[in-house]
Length: 333
Ligand code: GLV
Image (cartoon, rainbow, N blue to C red; front, side, top):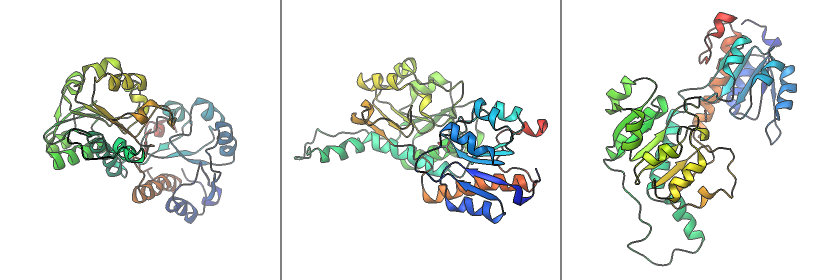
């Protein structure tokens, strides 16, 4: 869409890296940054969006039918993040609103977190760090604090896109792990690069020594890891989730860990977020939880901000949006 730069008004739903904001200002757009030390309520988001033409937001903003009914005037929504399950894409598309996101640039950083969680859980690093604080480091005990090794083990990927591929490469390179995966479609690049083998969901669950989730949240994946699935896993297995907390059932995961049905879990995502400090998972020996930091590096967050700004800039310059989530919108527009 062409709109004169002076008429473009972008609302940023919180403080984002300056690099992205700079791109928008350099275009001559009006830019408003929500600078309070808390996210906007949905009511505030709606009210503030009314006087803007574009919204630059992130995963905890609820861009649902209620919001879109009130803000159907928006020209574009640009999401700072790769996942966009917070946005009702169907409703946005119906209203002719293109939605952009920031894939690719966060794959390495997120795979690093999955890989780090895997190692940390296998050696109980989080729990043992805390044991020093409790005064439990008394003397060397050969049979205590034992972890398990990862060399030559089987990595199962639930979802093999860009982030899954980076995780596969790390596990293959560092530990010669065998890679199996289950995905909506085959990923021949990953098969070629890492020797990954496509398997059924049940095979994935039953054969993995480490099962790492790298899929988007959708109807098929919500609650996919429940008691029935944990019951099928190896008692020595480690479950890793850096995608979305709603993909596993937390109570069922706690039950599986408590009862030795699986060995450990590493989570960068929880349901709900933030996780309460009293959550049982935080005191478990073979569990490591992080506060959704997958993309949280200086380099990656800068690139995400640039990409999210670029989606808006290219759109207003009348060019293709570099990362458009709902290309169908072009037909309705
Ligand atoms: C983070 O979770 C993202 O989707 O970018």
